[in-house]
Every structure is written in C-alpha cells, then in structure tokens.
Length: 234
Image (cartoon, rainbow, N blue to C red; front, side, top):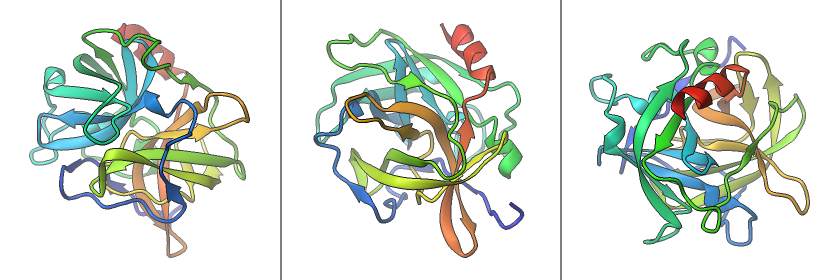
C-alpha cells in the first residue's frame, strides 16, 4: 500500500477529466437515477447517491472549498438526482451536512480515506415514485467485482458507468478498486449488482491513486459510524 499515491478529488467544474475504459451510458441500468450530481456553490461538483428520501451520501472533502480549504455552506449545494442531459429526476437543496468526526480536511493518504464520507440532508424529500434510494451493504472483499457510476467534466450532465472492476485490496481504512476515476467523481457510489435487483452501495469514492504504475481508485468503506451520521443528519 506504500505505492499508493492519493490525489484529492474535489474539483471546480470544467477541470475534471473522464473516467477511463469500461465506461458506458446508463440507459437500461436499474436504479441509476439515485445517483446524482452535487453542484457546490456554483463553482465545484461532486457525485452523490440518494440513500433515503431526504438523505444523500458523498465524500467528506466535497464539503470544503478547493481554493482555500474552508467548509462550504450546505445551503449552497444542490443535489440533482438522475441528471441526464438538461433534466434531472429531482433537484433539491441541501439543508444540513454531517461529516465523519474523524475526517480532517487537507490530510491525504489511505487512512484519511476511511473517514472521507458525509451524509447530507435535503430540504425536501424525494418521492419514491420519482427516485428509489439505494440500499447500503457491507464493503466488498478482495477479488469481488464492483461498478462505479460517476459524473465528471467530460460527462458533467450525464453519468457514466464503469462495470466489472475488481477490488484489489479491502482494508478497514480503504477499498482499492481497478476502476479509474478523476476529478468530479468524488462521492461516487461503488456498487454491487445482482441480476433482477437494484444495485447496492458498498463504498464511496474518495480519491484516485496509482498502484504498480496503473491508475486505481480509493474508496471509503461504510463502517458502523455511517449509521451515526445518518441519525445526526436526520
């Protein structure tokens, strides 16, 4: 793991790059509308996922201004669920942000990855008739296949799916996958899919890295602290 080089993933809109190979359009992908874009103060973007009618899950570092490192006002953030082109399934402002208590903005590395999660409460719930929240599941194990759905600069208005990535390492502090992500993908859901079922969210993209000369992604496992964050946000 010493060969991993983490790179902060929050970025101003217009400076991100597309995720690498294996990506595709999401039409026909069950439940994808729960994934949406976070517009942060009109200057930055991240990706987030609806996990309850009025709650979304994203990366903690998305809650900080990339220019000066100060926390942004939650009320300057808008979540656009299922954004595809010019229209979204639902758009809501954020009313409250709860960040993992162990997260310290500005520090990098795999141990910081493990706390890089935040739960946001929306100002109004999104009806299940419009968008069905995704359920949460335990972090994947080494060798398992996962998918990542994300927004980035080259697909800022429509998500792209990277499918059949592999979990390279699974530790308490981070999950490392072969999915290659870039700026804008922060907070993206790492998904496990089963035939005929909605995807389950098993981890949250924190940053990109390099391992053995190849691009990989670092994701935050969904530990027991997440339930406490959900209670605080609600």
